[in-house]
Length: 53
Picture (cartoon, rainbow, N blue to C red):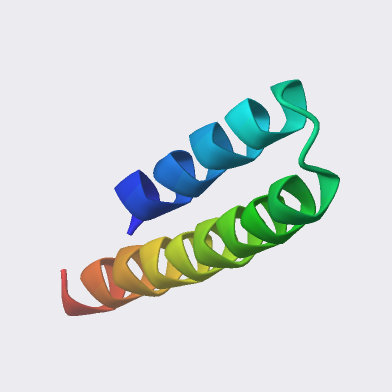
């Protein structure tokens, strides 16, 4: 999932360089959402690992 977030971030940066503001904004938003989901899943995995031992 982190790789998808990075891919959308790269798409956003390339679109911004070429002047496509709408596409850049949408791609950056998707990248932020995917990164947030990744962080939540990572924290949940850490907590579960700590609880299970």
